Structure formats: C-alpha cells, structure tokens
Image 1 (cartoon, rainbow, N blue to C red):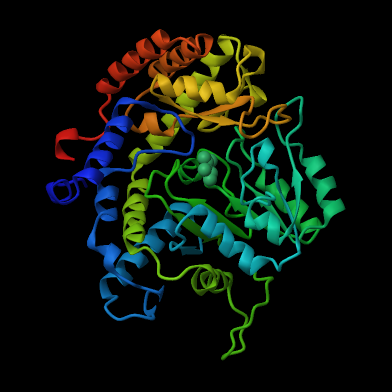
Image 2: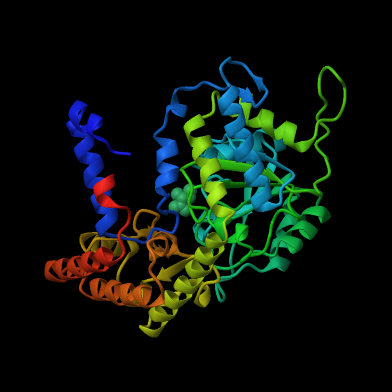
Length: 434
Ligand code: DSN
C-alpha cells in the first residue's frame, strides 16, 4: 500500500501512484479485462515475498530459505484446484501470455498447426496472431463467428478442423459475449486427434462461480489470468482437469516412467519459459483464490452478469448494435457503425468524460485495428464497487450522451462530473487508509 516511507523517499513516484488511485476512484472503469483487487490482495503484493527467489516447486527448490514460500505456494495451488475442481495447478506464470507460452512449449513443436479463434472476431493475440510469437512459431489457422449471428457455428469449426488437421485447437476469447460448448469442441478435437486448450482468462471468475459452462472436464489444459473476472493480482494460472489422460508420452529421464500432464506443464513454466516465480504474486493469488471460495464471490459474479445484461439491454433500447445481440457473460461488444463514430473516437471522447473503455475490432470490421468500428465494455470492475442494474443503465445513458456529442467539451465535463458523483456513492477503497 502507499505509505509515508514512499512519500518521503520518492515523492515523484508516490504522487503518480496517488494520481492513478484517484483516477481509478473517480472514473467509470469499464474495460472488460480489468477489476479491482481487494486490499488484502494488494497487501500481499506489496509484501516481503517479492524478495525471495524460489525457482522450482514446493519441496523441490533450487534455493534455500523456501520454508514459508513453499507453504504459500501449496496453499495457492490447493485453493486453485478446489476452486476449479482441477487435478493439478501451476500458479507461477507471470501472466496469461506466459501461461499460454508454457502450453505451446510442451504441446506443440515449431511449425505444427494451431486452430484458434480469430483475433479480429474476438479471439486473443496469443492464439496465433502473426504479430505474436504464437503466430510466428506455429502455423496458425482460424475459426470465427458468423456474420449474421455474431456466434460460433460448431459445424463450420468442425469443417475447418477436418481441413487443417491441427495439432492443437484453442478456445477462449477477449471479446466474445456468448458461452462455449466445450463438449462439441472436444468431439471435434477427438475427431481430428488434436489437443484441446481453453484460455478462460476473461471468464475464469464466472466459471469458478459455476455460472458458465465448465471447460475442465472437456479440455486437455486450461489457462487463465488471475486479475480479470477472477479479481486477483495480475498474473497467470494453468490447470489440468481430473479426467485428462496422458497422450503426450513424455518420459522422465531417470525412472523411465511416462510423466503426468502436471509434471510436463510444470517444466514448461520452469525451466521452460520462466526463471524465479514472483512469490508476492503467488501469495496474492492464494489470497484471491481464498476470496473466490467464499459464498459472496458467487453473488458478485451473478451481479456481474445481471449488470452486463441490463446495460446491454439499455444500449439496444437506444438503437446500438451489439455483436450477437446481447451478452451471456461480463462484456458487450458494440458495433458503432450505425452511429457514425469509430471505436477510436469513441474511446477518446469517453476518456475525456472519465469513462474508460477500449476501442475494439468487431467481426468483419471495415476499419483498421488502430481505428476499429467498435468498443468493448465490461462490468466486473464497477460491480466490485457495489453498483447494480440502475447504475449500469445510468452509465449506458451517459455513454450515449458522450457518443452523440463526441466533439463537445461541455458534454465531456458535464458527464465527468456526473460520473464523479456516481463514484463517490460507491467508494473504491478506504481512501484515507491508503
Ligand atoms: N489485454 C486483455 C484484454 O483486454 O482482453 C487480453 O490479454
């Protein structure tokens, strides 16, 4: 936490952190991939755990002095397994992209084929985009949504898989508003003898709360970030379900036995792609998973979805085009083309009014990724502050006001004041104690 020592020693950094805290406290944070971690999580992040090297795993480290961090990492792993009903967990990935890199390293050889969700249709950079290591190292092919419905068509994915014959099929998205049919994906993967990987970074909290379909029983591996709907510290996590048979056939050098998937993926993280784990992050993950195991977490996640549905309905009512017509999860993707404004202009104008969203490609976009025709809006962060359907409907109206007057400084200022007044009713943290 921000404390007097930092203020005395480095007022420059201290002041900037204060300003960022104030920005978060008095603005509408509607980026779908962001959330507000609890004070307990932030305390663990700002702890002495950051001083400790702990390469390896609990009980099998390359450094001394690990007796306490071993227990912490075991707690984090056990809580993650309990939360998701997993057989195995690795809590060390520094981020979601790192978790994904470890999966690629162990599941695919350079040049092998991946079939992933097209980034421009809602997928993610690390699922084969040509500007990412995944697209540079592997031969990436893509499936996408249907133009008419904005939804996946599983028959078309099957056709594509038959044509491509990928080594691995990835599921998971950063801007898809509907749930996935994991059983259908597994059936497709089995037909073409592919490995199946779900990256649930966006929806992990909703899945933990059992409000969306569960990928664990159907996929060979699941990755996630820990800071989006899951509301933990910034970081990554890899899970393997209880019924995953080993088809990788990797053999332990000394004993000659076939390694289990957990062991294989553990070595993908370290020494495969990372050095020492960030133990302050691991400690904070343990705290966050502990929070997610509480009944209140499920209530929070239910409200995230209710808020998204209410806000989406408010936009539809005002004549906005939502990709797929609405949402089943925590986010909505608005195609602004009928409103005569680009994603870039919308993001900038809303920013002036202290409403933070991100411009986003919509499926079959006619603009470049730097301009885009859409904006993506998510409800996790403001739901954490305690806001419910009326506040989200109100924010939808304020967003419309700004977009319909995107050039008007007066509108920006009026809306910023209205957002500030709203935020004051739902304080982010106990400000004086920060
Ligand atoms: N940057 C994340 C998002 O906004 O969805 C994905 O990595």
